[in-house]
Amino acid sequence: MALVSLQGVGKVFSGRTGAWEAVRDFSLDLAEGEFFCLLGTSGCGKTTVLNMVAGFDAPTAGSILLDGAPVAGPGADRGVVFQGHDSLYDWLTALDNIGFGLRLRGLGKAERRAKAEHFLRKVGLTGQGAKHPSELSGGMKQRIQIARALANDPRMLLMDEPFGALDAMTRAVLQGELSRIWAETKKTVLFITHDIEEACALATRIGVMRRGPGGTLKAIVPVDLPFPRERTSDAFMRVFRDVHGLIHDEIHGAH
Amino acid sequence: MALFMMRFTVRTERLTTIGGYIAGFALLFLIWHLAATYLVKSTLFPPPLPVLERGWMLIEDGILQEQIIASLKRIAQGFLLGSAIGIPIGLAIGSFKPVRWLLEPWTEFFRFIPAVAMITVSVIWFGIGEESKVFLIAYTTIFVVIISTAAGVGAVGRDKIRAAQCLGANRWQVFGLVALPATVPYILTGMRLAMSNAFVTIVAAELIASNDGLGKMLWDARLFMQIEDIFVALVALGMLGFATDRSFRFLIRAFAGRFNATV
Image 1: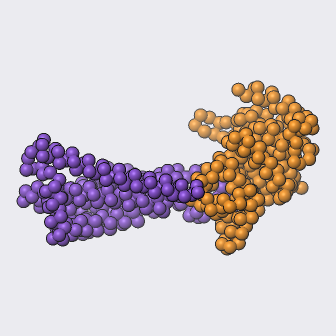
Image 2 (image 1 turned 135 degrees about the vertical axis):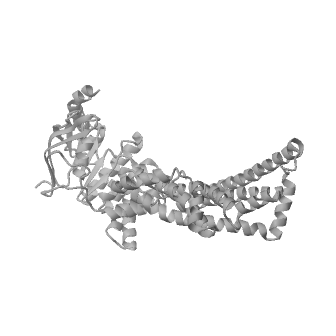
Image 3 (image 1 turned 180 degrees about the vertical axis):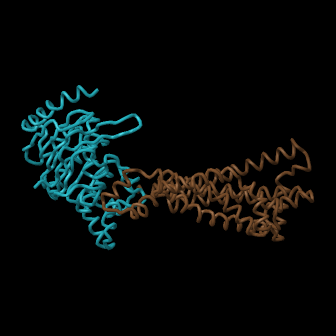
């Protein structure tokens, strides 16, 4: 059975300027342990899909099941990594940010600390635990976010363009680290991006979305390349070309 | 090395700031001196030296301290009372829509009735003792603190709350562990603004109805035409306000600097 199952999901936002159909008839099954990249142009509704799986928004049509049970609001079984670093708590140290979920569950101080240290090491920030978010770079903040989500041991990770605001170099480094962490933890990941190369570097499957409004899945491309991925290899280039071909029409119709 | 340099820079910066303050005050007194001695040349505008001499005399007699302490005590009591009432109300208004609908007319109504206008009522209700002054200071504090606190709650980033929810936080945990700490800088800023209001209010209240305090000192000095005493009281007020605001800013930095890098 699929870990997550979206069945005919639709979302219509109604505002002062009228109704806006963000997502239409979106169906997808995510298997345990896969890294699924949802790729689409801006405004195609990919973030809306993630927000519905996270439970921040309720679908207006269809249903979303997690382990067979309908999603009703956000919960600790789905860890979210946000695009901006505004989700970190400025008044806590990096270590306390990572241990925040454990604190909510009432874990003791020593145990919390040990676990947080473990995940601080995992994201490559050993020795930076006492710093506050304002003292960390953009890339470090995203590492803290990833560690915070992992420390809570969720069933799956939802990542909303987590590297979108980073410079190209930092982004590539973090993509490599995320791949390594995913290989170690085997967490199911739903990763939102508009970057074709990023999707090809990370995903086991890529879902390409049709442009909005009323965005929906256009095609799913399996990526059967070994990790770590060699971005200059012919095989990688072939996948890149396939996906690029699929999204080309969407890009040129979107503006 | 880097840490040492940082400390060094912080220390030099602090020294420069203090040096700047001293130079600024010196300039103020110099201009005052020049204006009084060469421009105005009136007994109604004494130069700084006789004022300072008179101030020193009043300190030696223990009179000035007494007035200062009387005023400060009222400010402290009213300010703490007002903050203690204002912060929870502000939090409630910022957190719950029905509370906002219910209480916002109150805050928007009373905030336009200045504490000075409430002096008469307060004296009728509480007499000219401590209670009326503490009431007025609390009154002038409450609304600024409420509005600033409520605005702070409203400004908590959406992702901060969402992040807590998907880490498993319930409503109360979101409030206590996210919304409340994120609002602290706003609360402190509101309190700092309220403090300057409190100074305005205490002088006005003591001018009209009091047995001691800096306002009373001003009033008596006017009655007996002790022009130096008036200026002593004015200088004391300025100094006190300056010192209070600096200490408040220092406290905000010490306790809440990490809450917000821009404080």
